[in-house]
Length: 288
Image (cartoon, rainbow, N blue to C red):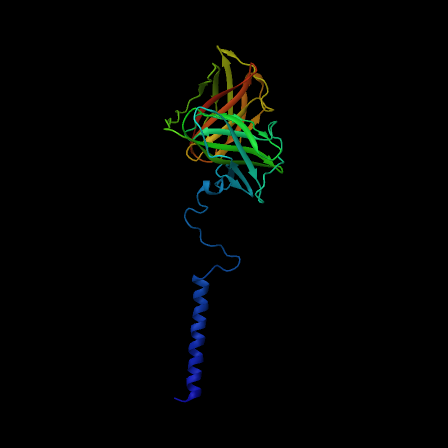
């Protein structure tokens, strides 16, 4: 075979190999510009991974950091049964404490502390120091792992960041109480919940009627509304934002809430009467 014939055959073979490689690269190689990579299980297909459920109803409080902001505790552990001082900062992308916060519900910072079994609920309002550190007195009488939620607004955007706090000792964890329409506060106020059937993605009207010794209780404004409500989802303790609604005194205290998924939620209602803040807790079952 002559040299020109060999060269022509080699060129043809090379063209075939290069063409096949281009086809294989388009099929098996890296994604081209504008294409979407295949979704891997556990990366974005679970609602709690990105703070959204079904892409429509956001939940908060699943992570310590979000959009450049981070919740940092000065210490991850407190002593049981002691009057301690909890210190924390909200840091920005530069790692420095953030100093400016918006006023929401009459406060610049709301701190929720609750044990992982959703007992020991506390709602605190820390004080900010000149260096940007927030501090608040805190006493935790039971051992276990607690979830700390910093609920605030910064640059007009509501945020809820959360992290864990340990209290050393053997934890006596409690089962979540069964759903009920009535609850009694530690100091003798009876609260009745009217919610109807709650379904995922649908707005639920939660109404609370408060009595004491069988007589309706006139509540005072608390945090700029008739009352304050925190809703936490069983399992991951996702933090739901609820909106107070205006109801007459005879209709009790009302809130609008959208539960993102089916399951059980713990509701913590706080109201002010006789010069003190009282807390009533309920378990709400959300079904399809």
